[in-house]
Length: 223
Image 1 (cartoon, rainbow, N blue to C red):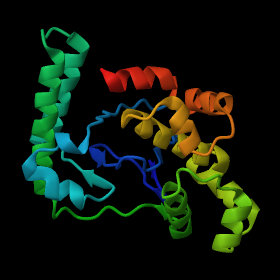
Image 2: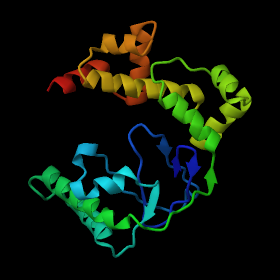
Image 3: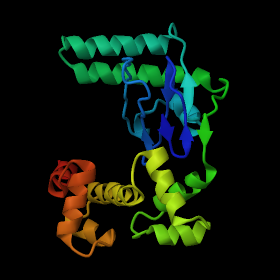
């Protein structure tokens, strides 16, 4: 599991927490061994009050014992999704997820799990890019600013993040554009805010990285 500049070996029961816009991906090392994982996406407003302190200071990863109630609830959620025999499945899923999030509070003092690989410079570069979603950042610019060769930056993005530098930069711009549209801006205004010279390029990038169209997200925001 890659989260920013950190790389972790995933073990049974590991729970990874990634905040909005933080880069994360899974690298499958052994393609012959099957595995499964649960993925939950939820806004900050969904977190129960008793768990807000935990999530405010949460680390990247915690190991949840197989017999822990939160792990058992995840298995129950899996059965519900597979059987789909609950009349209001979304309501039940929300109830189970809130229960799981509440139970995580007791892991505040859990032993820290260290990454097998950590790259502080990469973390700094990612932070720099993340804080400038409207800028056209280049590898030359990063090389000059962080005193690293262009080849090192290009290789590190490809090798550790499985994404090119420019794809990472443009994906961040598109995510920001999506938040602008959700906040009320038109797609054209979002395009201008993100400093694209023409709408056709913006549209192609938006569709490529978000698998959606600006007008559809605008329609959803108005509903």
